[in-house]
Image (cartoon, rainbow, N blue to C red; front, side, top):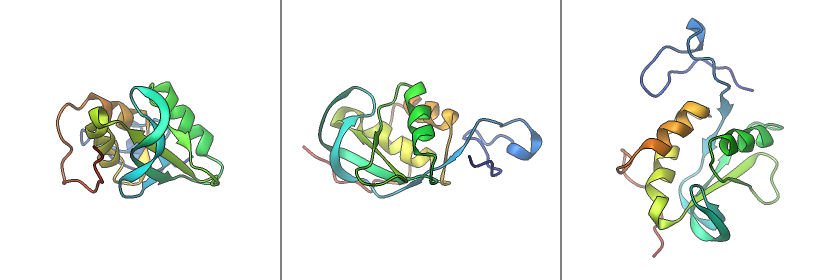
Length: 134
């Protein structure tokens, strides 16, 4: 588990102060693309959806998957890799997938970042690196 000092999304104090102590895991996202995955929000079948793969620390993939599951988010193991997870979205929830990628831009993921991304209603800042299906 990574315990690097980092600010939470509201600009709060990092780990050194003892205020932000949620488990944070390495989560290096790739650019958005298309892969066979369920939607992170509504689940469903594994069909071609907008998605991104994220690299996680060796041996922590299941912890990252469990972290997402605790927030009600559907993620899957990336085929043939023990250091990647795959997160996808239907067109109706694509903006939340982009928010999730934006929230984890520092290379870390924790429960507060997942909650933050899921609570957003508009487009994520910083433009899109995505192949939009449809």
